[in-house]
Image (cartoon, rainbow, N blue to C red; front, side, top):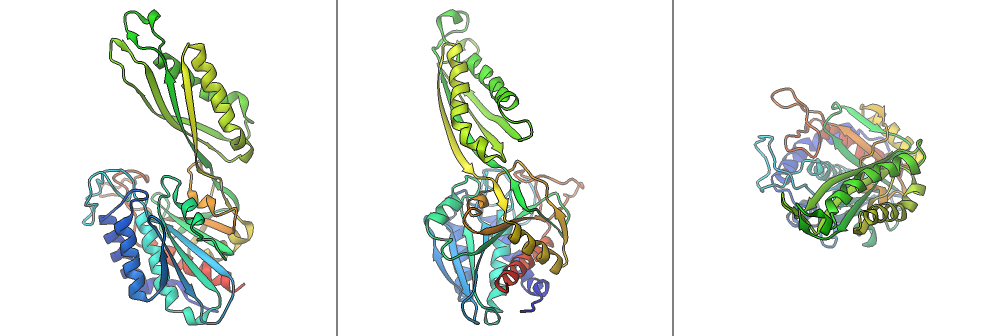
Length: 389
């Protein structure tokens, strides 16, 4: 079937921008996207598109082609926001305190809705099925797993996802075959000592000193225990203790993340983390508890799905750029072991009034709405090319 996906995307661009701005005004945190879910269902009802509400939030919509049975393609957009205070000054800025779509999931939601509107208008012209996943809780790594457990992948052959990018230029789309984004683990460590007067530390067991040694030791774990040709990042992003300038506290707590592309390293992380942390804490006469939480797997693009996507990028008139691997995690990775899948990075650079470009997860970040046309067109083209195989 010959389609003009760019023209279809143009035809829904105003709708996409208006819908996105409404979603942007009303951001919601992970697994609390109740108003967002209601808005998605409202628009689907207007279009007459069948859907199922997921639990507790999120939506699975479906359009069956009028030319009979065929393959099943899933298009995914995530919908949750972040605990960030908006500082963009946009007329449609967040109306909620310390909640913002600073990762662009409002744009993913809107582009997916635009793709539904466009594909619904040509549903009599193709065979097969397109599923559309409005996925909650990407930021916490819970959403994809919850959707899979609720049956979103039943019958799906291929899956495609898009993430907007505030740094790359409009009209560019990046992807690559194989690993694209790292696995991500969240660790929590409690080091338990004995409180004492700061002037008399010999009668206490100092968890802060132990915590400092643990932080250093975690970097030695990377440098001395893993293959130097396998990149591993360990970051401690939070450290707390309830002491005072003259009080050694009873406990110190830290949280952080470990990122890697190696499934073999992943399989050893829990034991390695336990051994290092508890061994160092013990040397300082302290006890330690370690919790390692799996946030997302390695996001790995299937070679066949990548080739379909690369061709689709050319067909919509965008500029294909080979993506380099990044340590940033993405829970789209949970879909990839089950179906042939490919993930894309969509350029949407928009400098502020001072000419500065801001990164995502920042309260100043902006996205150029002109990029939405490319995102919607890519969703349409990748889906239709896949169904035509």
